[in-house]
Length: 374
Image 1 (cartoon, helix red, strand yellow):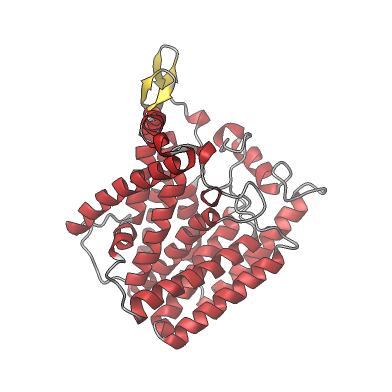
Image 2 (image 1 turned 90 degrees about the vertical axis):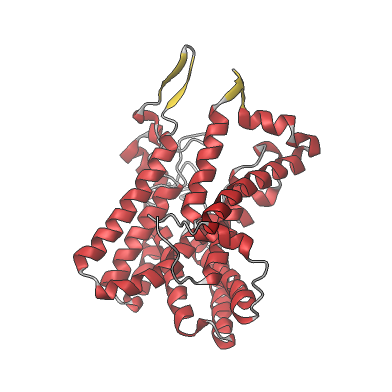
């Protein structure tokens, strides 16, 4: 933990928006009665919810553009130690979160949850890997070379999907190259099963293009530091966002925009959207100075990783503990309280209430100037 340092307010607000929405979409009271914009696209396509995760990676890149300024006065060994240490800790936290609470229900009570059935990859693990790879690229190469490598990574991933996926439909759930590679490397028991079969949307191959979301955030962050906080700079950022969205939209004709495959078109499309959203936040915060109502999101943005972990662990515990052998506390609270407001609205109300409880913890930490860092 560390005390506050000089911050970029618009980035805190942008990051806070992302974490706030992430908690809401992850903690619906009832998944079967969730408003469609709060659901991921079933496969190809795009919903507002699909923007949450890439926006978090984009924010990681934004923050990296400020942190990397300190690397110039540090030894290479010190920089590498920081990068690898942070990557390892975030990855481990993600793995332990999926293993948590380390026991499971059985006929005779609790039994130890075996490692053989624990998911290896996931959201935090992708954040860790994308951050680590992007940081190494940024440290060892100039910005222009990093951008070129990132573009090549997007085309390389497209090639992998085409060449190693099923010839008939390389972008399908059962025929994509990422699924084949993950099954070969980790086996089905270590994969996510939320799609009705063993398939991990945060698999190894799809981590390759996700690195570009971090690089995109870094490039935008460096641009903002030099000339982004002016009307001219803001116009440039918005224009870049529009162009990237257009490229992603037309690339979708050849390579579908697909969050679960994290296709290259999806990367370009989401970076474009993030440029526009961040531009809108900067206009409100930096140019119009309308900051009186941004504090709510600043709370999330100042402790993003901690609050996200808190929300996930809290939800896991509510699912794990039960009021009777068949009903979790999570389900019981929704049915007993929030469902009275209607199936869909009650599900949303549950998520918003849970988000507000997480915000309250963040508020207490912020008032005490406590900022959890990895």
